[in-house]
Structure formats: structure tokens, C-alpha cells
Image (cartoon, rainbow, N blue to C red; front, side):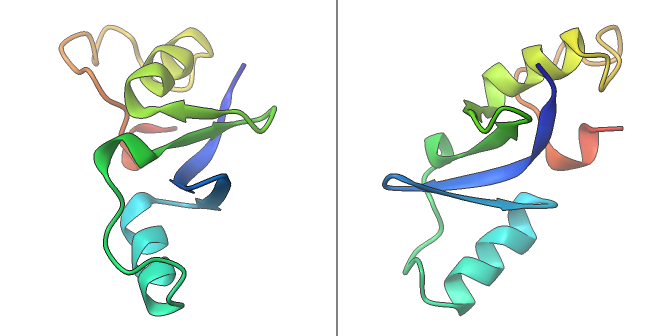
Length: 84
């Protein structure tokens, strides 16, 4: 299962974007959220549409070959810019 893109979860709605900072800015500007989302509501969406936390997404991305596992062995969270 591959990571598709960055995502923000707001209640039962998942918003997708190329990176978290642009996505948060767009959501604040459009007034879909009033405050930046909590850390556990920032994650990624898989190709199957499943929301994954930053921690789970790191494992998925390494297994899918989307990033180098050796390079990220000391990391615990996936960042938008990590994806190749």
C-alpha cells in the first residue's frame, strides 16, 4: 500500500494536499477550520483512501519503496517532503 499524499482529518472529513503546511493554510483561509489541527489529525492518505498517522505512514512509505528505509531509520514520523 503506497502513500498518496498529505492529509488533514477534521472530524469525519479528510482533506488532501501536496503538503501539510499548504493544506492547513488553505483550510484556515477557507474557514473550514478555526485553529491548526492537532498533531494526531495530521497524516497521509494511502492510494486506497485510508488515513494513516505520520508514524504509520513512515512505515508504509518505507515498505513501498517511496523513501529509503536506511536513511530514515532514526525518524519516527513521515514528512511531506520525505516522499520521492
